[in-house]
Length: 253
Ligand code: PGA
Image (cartoon, rainbow, N blue to C red; front, side, top):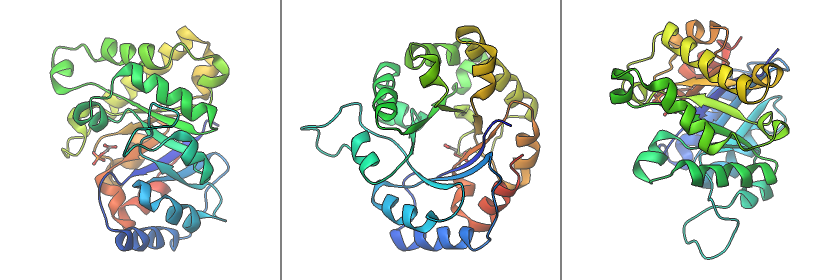
């Protein structure tokens, strides 16, 4: 079975102490994960070591960064390189989140560089894509997401592509309480998988986990994750509550 992933995206929330409490709350639930299931915590940079320590020894629980630089190293004040993440044993990194694209002007080309640097350092990119409300309203979401994937990912080899995780996050559903319907999510996930099948092949497309993001919560996780092409979620708001996120982990296929 394809990997199924519950990924928490804390964004710029919680103090160190609150973060520690939240991790303890979730880990104390002792939810056992099957071989194909993962629980990933994308925490702010200063908490990565804490998160790594907390999940160590827990099967398939992992810490993730929320971003990394598009440069290898050097005079880039305030940036964090993929190699630095590797040096503290981080194996996952969210890339191209819509908030990074919108507020920090991250473009498809720069994201392609970040993906390459992650792969060079043995880090799995959780690559985000998704359309705005205005694009959805004119029905152009399929082409829009195709361009995002084409410009950032489709020049990678099949071997590299198989190391990636995709997160489809319709921007109109992020932090708005407005979730895409199960039908809308499944339709876009199937479309994305089909793009990988056309560019690479069916086996590769079937191998790649595609997560849904946008107001996932305990109350809707099971229904969303039940869709054949939805392989878990990238969860913002609801990942900040131990009870909510624990239920989301339990909702994995
Ligand atoms: P949300 O955020 O769950 O709060 O909508 C999801 C995300 O931005 O990754």
